[in-house]
Amino acid sequence: MIDFRKIIRKSLLDNEVVLDFLAKINGVPNLSFNAVTNAKYPLIVYTEINTIDAISSGNNVVDVYETRWQVSIFSEKGANYKVKNAVDEQMHKIGFKLYGTIEMVEPDTKINHTVLRYSQTISKETFETLEKQLNI
Picture 1 (cartoon, helix red, strand yellow):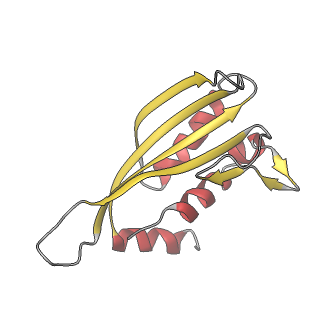
Picture 2 (spheres, rainbow, N blue to C red):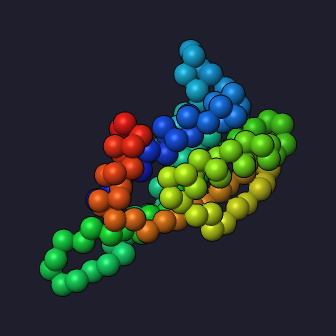
């Protein structure tokens, strides 16, 4: 199995536009995996939608996967296209392709929520090479 959590986090934090956008909590950028941990905006949450075997061959070990991830950008001030483009650029750098976007205002909080959905098919070998390139 492959796990993109560290790769996505490092890639997003390596972008100055993304880093400048995020609120800082005790000096730590408000970027989290899978859940909004507090209501300090702006923040970005990245979530695994699913990772499945892309190739199966009987009882052989499968080392190619299709993985889908969602990156959610939350802000009190309308959609920020500069940040959206920066996130998209970083996700493309690590091999993801954008397959869907949604922009909405959360009805209960009135917070702007931009959703970017990504997918890629990747071999375990390519994944491990990517980890090494990013020093993870």
